[in-house]
Length: 379
Ligand SMILES: *Cc1c(COP(=O)(O)O)cnc(C)c1O
Image (tube, rainbow, N blue to C red; front, side, top):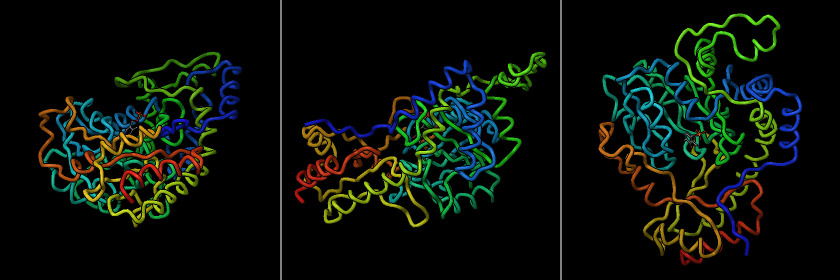
């Protein structure tokens, strides 16, 4: 019996050819393909500006800088997220303040954010967890009323929609990941998107040492203009090798989302009769790309979450514990950003697991996962 993994990127000959072309061109650093990928991504996501970065983590760091977050500020984040969400404000010397999430989506809500605001809050980072679109409008309202920047960590959410539009465009600035754990991958890579031209221009400089003339521009002219460094920047660049793969992957994104949504629907139908399992589902306000198909193991299930993961492993199926909680990690132990209890976060992180879901998962393989879960639950 072959092992079913929890996730597999969908890569093929077109990506290999695109890579070979970049190598043959002799320009492998950030250059024309990165610019083309930025343009195509902005168009796909219905935003005005896209700035490619080395990862979502670095895009989040830039997002907070251009949004004006300063050392000593408070930035509200969910603990219920990959740890990079909490790390971004920490890098700036700001304090990540943990807010709880809503049970149905695993995302921040205006109520959970309002409960932890302080006089020093200058930004919130709201996550589309596992691709589940966050409910933007109430957060937008809360932030606008108080002059707080709304940053969207859309790392998992390329292809998810909010009220009929791609997610991300309604925040002040959004960050995306192209790590292979997400749908669209460039190996490593990320993107910052915004409709604010000044913020985009500053992010574009900051990701390249804050140079006022990019390396690609200087290389393109025989008599290179003298560059200047207006502030202390970073090397957060994407390479053209990555961007070439990204362009191919972007062309496949809609098909990936469609396939994942079909497979998610098959899971939901199969588990619909089990009172012991709660499955991820679209919220009323949008559609998920199902980057992660999570289920919550309820007390009615015959096993607990750990036992179910072991049972699946015995059947040669890889599942994963659900989303982590940053406040439980040693890096944030005793952290001053724990200002209120996080009961929903703790329940979800303890009782959810992620089932295999990827583009090339065959129905007969998914059926193996389904029957393993059904047998485990006694359903
Ligand atoms: C994956 C992920 C990140 C980090 O993305 P990288 O591109 O690996 O830096 C950040 N936030 C969330 C919610 C993620 O899922």
